Image (cartoon, rainbow, N blue to C red; front, side):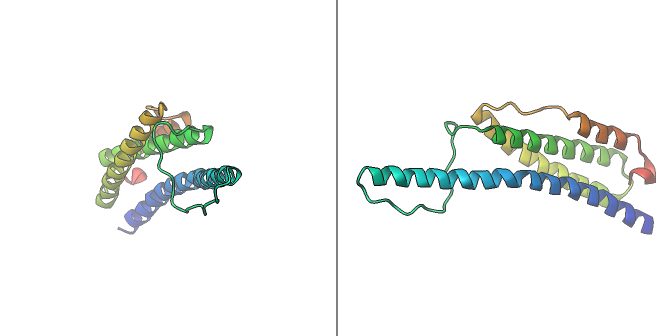
Length: 158
C-alpha cells in the first residue's frame, strides 16, 4: 500500500507538473491581453480627446471577442500549446485507464479525461471561430512521453 501511495504521488506530481507548465505558458498571453486592452482603451481615449469630446475613464471589464477580433501569433501559439496539453492529458489518461492497477490512479485519469475533453471542446470552438487549425496529433515530445508510458506495466506504471 505504501508503494502504491508513493506511485500515485509520483503520477499526480507528473500530471500537476504538466498542468503547471500549461498555466505558466498561459500567463504571457493573459498579460498581453491585458496590455492590448489597456492600449485599446488609451487609444480610444486619445481619439475622443482629439475630437473635442471629453475623454472617458477606461473600464476594467474585458472586451468581448468575436470572430472579427484579430488573432495574434501569440494567440495561435497559445492555442496550439493548449491543444497539445489537452491531447497529451487525454491520451496518457486513457492509457492509465487501460494499464493502471490502482483505483485512485484510474479515478484521477477519468477526471483528467473529462476536464481536458471539455477544455478541448471549448478551445476547438474558439479556434474554429478564429480560423485557426489546431493539432490533432501529439508532437514529438509528447509522443515520446506516451511511448515511454506504454512501455511500462504493473507497479512500474502505477
